[in-house]
Amino acid sequence: MIRSLPLMPLLAPTAPAGAGCARKGSCGLPSTGLDEATRARVATHPCYNQDAHQYYARMHLAVAPGCNVQCNYCNRKFDCVNESRPGVTSRVLTPQEALAKVAYVAAKVPQLSVVGIAGPGDPLANAKRTFHTFELIARDFPDLRLCLSTNGLRLPENVDRIVNLGIDHVTITMNHVDPQVGAGIYAWVAHDGRKLTGVEAAQVLLDHQIAGLRALVAAGVLVKINSVMIPGINDTHLQEVARLVKAEGAFVHNVLPLISEPEHGTQFGLTGQRGPTARELKDLQDTCEVSDGPGLMQIMRHCRQCRADAVGMLGADEGESFPPELYLAQGVANEPEQRQGVRAEIEQRRAELAVLRDERGIATDGAKPEDVVLVAVASTGGGRVNQHFGRAEEFWIYEAAPGWARFVQVRNVRRFCSGLLGCDDDPSALGKLVEMLSDCAAVITADTGPRPREALEEAGICCITVGDEAEGPDSVVEVAVEAAGVALVPAAAVMAGVA
Ligand code: CLF
Ligand code: SF4
Image (cartoon, rainbow, N blue to C red; front, side, top):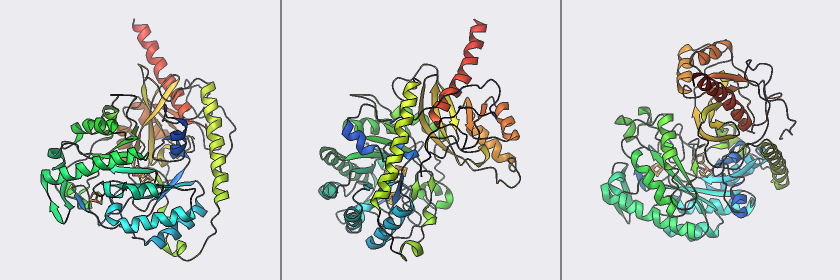
């Protein structure tokens, strides 16, 4: 259930002296400039709307084992890394098993809003299984949005079916718009009974991706483009991809980092191709936010590269809580009213937070102020700062200034506190964590132990704590704005003194 507001003073007594501020608010939709109908279509989609990912869950159905492309960053012994973090092999479901899983998860996770098919291979290389699954879900769960992710090779021939089934959100992974670049990314592309390689393979794939994108946009489907950032291969090229997909009407562009650990056994992993650092990724995402033509290309910055069988909120995969012995063993009642009730609560909370943010004059879009700082917030969602420093598995990074903040990145970290010995059990992990946050002016958590606080402050990072969830602040955005004020005002004072 969603806890209703009450609003509390922002900084709890644990906040350091001098960090005083007391505001509340919420994170607005990043989809400024959208018409009302489009706004409604993305309002509950956790991937197409950054704010929604704090409140709504998705689930993936791993019904598509095969693939018609071999990307150099993929080893299908694991999962499709277009949409999945390589890790553990998915159990491939039949359409009927997938339906049973949706029924079970929808009953247990009432904030579920989207059902996606994203692997472990390519959904359209397994079109029969994929579409049969979607048919079953659409029949029994018409309130759940349908989402599909594909490499695009078989997209043009399937657009009519996608539209007729009401699949409103489609992702195409496009890593190049120049086949010379693409030739370094794909080992082969299977097309018309031939296994193509090199530039020819990359050109055929690109032609189908663009044709599919155009047809989907013409049919009114919201298209997201995923691009894997591969340093030295397509990093400097992805701005061209952003320009093209924006011109062709894509809704949002998701630039995600290559994962290439050698133990995953991918071509890139075995040849030592590195992935980007968090800062390189953010710089490229900023570059891809191209503004040619009307408006900016929206960039998705909160992707968690989830598995093909992921369940739950982004960043908090609960897939292992739903083993087949549970969802195949027992029938559960389908209760759409329960889901509607939860959605109504969520929307009420979001509306209240938006009003408060507006009353306090905080913007989450529009022109970026001249002076901004990066602020890291430990949150697990719901708009709240609710995570202790040592237990955080990710930090949400905001660009912030007084009166303005926007979410720009999520940085995954290895939780360094086991909770058994206190928050200092692994000094090297602490050092790495502080280094990862070293470009931030402030780190805001529910609580931070004395050693990490000392390490952060030694690194020049302002450490702000807000108290545990029950008392903690209700808006990560307001906290980020307040922290920016704390960080920027002293800097301005120093500059004034110098002048
Ligand atoms: Fe799934 Fe993809 Fe639909 Fe989202 S994921 S099929 S659009 S419902 Fe989302 Fe996961 Fe990133 Fe994909 S966080 S990997 S972008
Ligand atoms: Fe792997 Fe997906 Fe590429 Fe196919 S399209 S090879 S499943 S990453």
